[in-house]
Image 1 (cartoon, rainbow, N blue to C red):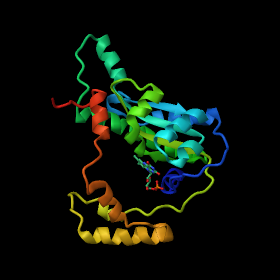
Image 2: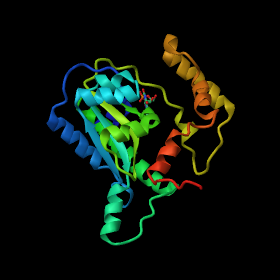
Image 3: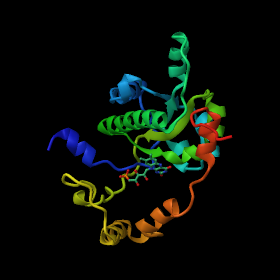
Length: 241
Ligand SMILES: Cc1cc2nc3c(=O)[nH]c(=O)nc-3n(C[C@H](O)[C@H](O)[C@H](O)COP(=O)(O)O)c2cc1C
């Protein structure tokens, strides 16, 4: 196995950090490794807000109370960004149509690939971190705090730092339940039962609900309207009026 694959397979989210600081030159390397990710037509439809001041981390924590936001060394907000596209379109005196699901997928996928590169690069240098998607529930507050202009939207944060503690690697679904030879196969309920048992064995006494019960919490009710509302405000989704 290559060192790279060994690193990738040893990933665990880290939510507990020491007070040690990531040197600026390491952070630059990590961010440049992030930038190296593929992007749709090389448009690079994302921006990253790098937050290192305790004051701003605290302000973000006040919006989304996950402890690791204020205890990490660096908080990165991954932003889907068509604002630069607007500048380019204006430069060429063309009309601008940023709204739509396809465009949201373009910027979201670009930002996600960069985010994953960043986390892996950080892990390769001995740091750790966790992605924080719940920040989307506070998009308006974040936008105000961090000066996000129209045609941009927060996608997820990444809290980075020196790990105080590593949890054991979390189990994944068996490969054959997510990778199919040639054609898709719909999962039968045994797949779900079996992974509930695997996840329960992993979590032990820390488990409060089954893995499938958490799926129900997410997908067993209509999604929160906050993100859709915000994307309409940012002119990235059409408002049906
Ligand atoms: C887009 C995205 C958003 C996430 N948001 C959160 C979050 O808000 N809070 C959190 O503690 N973990 C968050 N996570 C981390 C996942 O819970 C974690 O990756 C998953 O449980 C697998 O665990 P592992 O990363 O340790 O392998 C997020 C992960 C992703 C990919």
